[in-house]
Image (tube, rainbow, N blue to C red; front, side, top):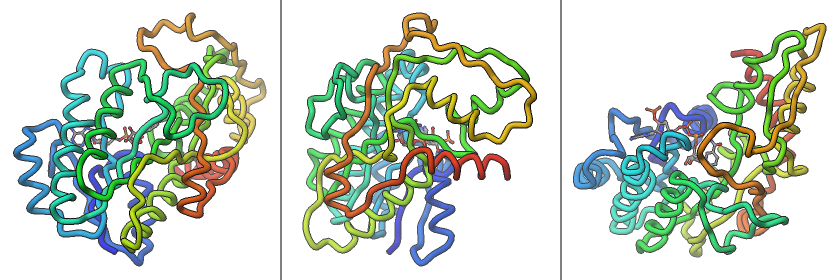
Length: 295
Ligand SMILES: NC(=O)c1ccc[n+]([C@@H]2O[C@H](COP(=O)([O-])OP(=O)(O)OC[C@H]3O[C@@H](n4cnc5c(N)ncnc54)[C@H](OP(=O)(O)O)[C@@H]3O)[C@@H](O)[C@H]2O)c1
């Protein structure tokens, strides 16, 4: 199988590279220099027409700056919605299946139980709206398209909540972490396993799998504060005094972007359709911490 992956230096793109380097599949990776997804759609279309002679396309690149997107709506929508739409057009013409990675931030967080993929989306911020627009644009095209919504990505190499917490690890330090947003962390290496499993299934082209699926690690939902506690507990720190976590409420956090209070995703339709259940996020945390120690 030959893949084209938009994104080269992002967390997911790098995890895909690590796995694909081991074979047997081959992949091309397009970074921002090769194809700037914020550029003129006509240029992106031309690039895709020139380059997409592959079995499956994966859109792992995205405008992921949730705060920045509030001030840069135009770029967020260009990268997360318009560019994917244009690429989906080319995929439709060539009969190439497409995988689009999306987010739990398409939901408003009002639910108290895990979100099903068909639950009405109601994003609270520009980033979530741009990703939802990307999902819809792709699904309206005539290509075989799988949208994989995931949540709270972390690994040992990227810029994410886990690595940010570990950078703050100092003797007896007090840190304030939000305790009233609940989600499910997802180890990027496990997400990459899921993406490659879906790509293989799409490459077989037996039956259409077009639709929206939720794919995250399993395990108990947790707050950011709970996740932070688990990170420090497992980090194998040599500190004589532990880091102290002060749980705060979202409203005490001086950021202006609304985020869902509850964004746990129900993964059962993904598991049933693709025959893969991701491990507990705590197992992912062990792997991410091992990566971080080697980094
Ligand atoms: N991170 C999370 O917690 C999270 C949660 C739910 C869903 N997701 C989704 O999961 C996917 C992967 O996320 P990630 O954490 O791997 O993202 P990431 O680490 O922030 O990487 C984003 C990638 O997109 C590329 N990119 C951004 N703007 C671009 C542009 N104008 N043209 C071309 N490339 C551009 C970046 O390239 P540069 O390196 O050149 O900037 C980078 O390679 C995304 O679709 C994201 O929406 C993420």
